[in-house]
Amino acid sequence: MAHTTSGHLLIADISGYTHYLTSSELEHAQQVLGSLMELLIDHTLPPLRVAGLQGDAVFSYGIASGALGGQTLVEMIETTYVAFRRAIEQMVLNTTCRCNACANISTLDLKFLVHHGTFSISPLRGKDELVGSAVIEIHRLLKNHITEATGVRAYTAYTAAAVDALGLDGFTDNLIPHTEAYPDLGTLSTWVQDMHPVWEDQRDDSRVRVNPDDALAGSRTTFPSRSESPGSCSCNRSTDRSCSASTGKTRANGSTAASPKAQCSPATTAPTWSRPKPCWPCNRCSTSSPKTPHPSPARGSSARSPSSPAAAPPPSPSPAAGAEDRGCPARSTTSSAAG
Image (cartoon, rainbow, N blue to C red):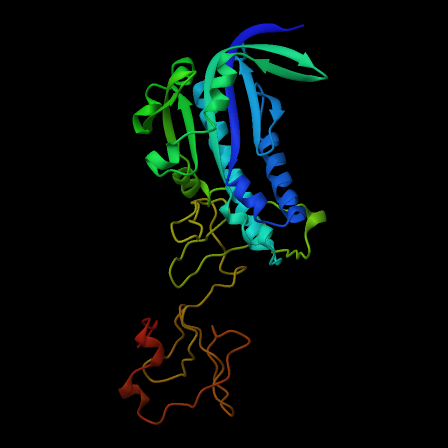
């Protein structure tokens, strides 16, 4: 049984549909348009309901008691447009066909019309048939001069009735005013939003997710994570004498600051030396500095520094006589314990 109510009316119309369909191979053109129409239907979310499909357009409505806010509707329209443009972009990038239907995909665009008024809803074979002057007005708006007057090809046109009902008075400050006159309907005032800036602002914000079952190829890499067991130490004694225990705080350079209660033990922790250069016994460096390890002496020498590590780097040529006058190589970075 039919009932009369007031609410919002929305039409999402694919621009360039007629020219695209008449200048392209029908088989491929229908596949492209079918995918785009399904996208528009999927993005018609409650409390909006699809009232009908009109070839290149999706007509939907929402009753006034459905609590559809103005900001919610604006965001829904913008999200739909971004998804539509992303679908067009992906089709262009992924196609290898050279037919006119695939070559002209980029000529398609989208526009929206938003209106508010009173209409009657009549169930007809499982579908809602909308009747009323507001329904006639929004369909007449499909034939307009917005692009000729403003130069905007992709847009959302909000009628004055829709702006008042949705509370979008402040939103229209940045929109373009436009008026359409029809002989049997009179004048319809609209506010036009250019949708291209919306696409440019959001085109890089969203991620395109591919279902693993639809992927042509894939790879998976496992990256090991660094874990420190209790008692381990990651400090760098060349720059910090304290222990970088896992209980400390993170420094700005990414290392871990030491906790006062978590100090490493030199007997159990191998420090990291910043300049592991060998130092040979000389008259000016009789004992090893704790900061500069002394490797084993040259082959044939029995003398060995008591603090040198068990495994030392390959020896470099021993300094000639008079090395005490040239200075110890280790003393260039650290002072020895005894001169």
